[in-house]
Length: 336
Image 1 (cartoon, rainbow, N blue to C red):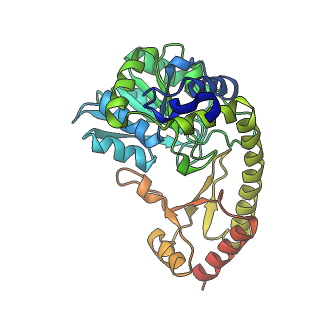
Image 2: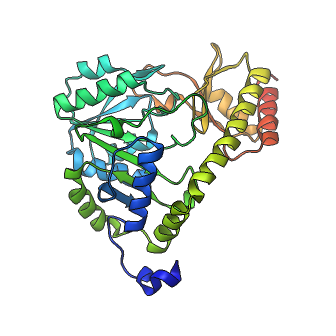
């Protein structure tokens, strides 16, 4: 790769992203996610958080409302709060965002942040009917949909539904993706698939923010994808993570079945767990920490007074033995 591009990789790159990588990402999204996107619509960035920050700066004026899922991704809330946007929560149910609440909204918000393929943190998958209803709602009301597809590569049950961007014939969807989950966080490469009319503005804003993503990393990743290694890697990791997910679900049922109800999302890299009545989220997190087990609380991801107590348990970076050991240790300290 260095021999082919020589010293060009040491120079300032295209703020929109290296063309080979944009082509590789577009081809991947069209094939694997059912997207309908061209390379010129791809903007290569450093992370999903940078994508969200750009959305907050360009789509939402200070003091204006933005619609977010409730419960929802904490990083998205902070990104929009940093732009002084007013957060308007829209509740989700077991199938994702509730369209009746969305249609009833009178806040005047012009965009919605949503995680349809694997709602964070509940794990719900938005069914096709709601995706189409969401697209029509955006088109009819002149809204933007910010679709965060952060870990859709890891789908374990049934066939994955096409992303909202691929179904949206009205070009109202901004699609956010990242390589942090499929490869490694230190790579610092994410991307957006933008409606044609937004590409110029987002690229210009990105050029002001940090210029460009290092070309060596982009071109290396492009070659990795072009040669088919990325798809092979994702398939292998999907199989590995499915096994670890099964181990965690089994261990939770065996050792903590009377403490938490583990939800069973169709994909993702974490499992939401709802605490049984009488168990305190704050106290269980404190007890777990004393035993060397780190738990992420569920209630902090809710807006408003109505919250569900529980945990978010990640398993991707743990071996089967580590998962089993951690659950046993957690059970022993909670039931002491």
